[in-house]
Amino acid sequence: METLLLVTGMSCANCVRHVEQALRQVEGVQQVKVELEAGSARVEHDARASLASLVAAVVEEGYEAAPQP
Image 1 (cartoon, one colour):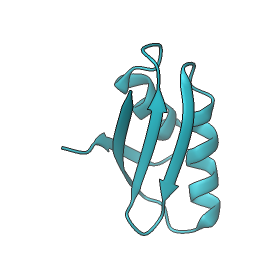
Image 2 (cartoon, one colour):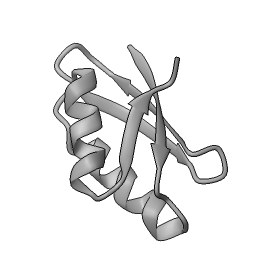
Image 3 (cartoon, one colour):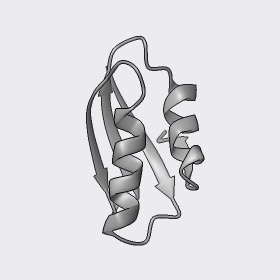
């Protein structure tokens, strides 16, 4: 499965690294690509990683996340 999240609050490469690390720690996540300029995170995962768990991981790091329509 692939989920694309809109991530707000990122302003630098450090922010990108924090979001990537948080998402990689969610059970079931296989690959993560965060783009600062686009304000997005593309997450490849299996069924163990729910949308809610992905969003929660980003929010715990101090950023906002929502599914891209």
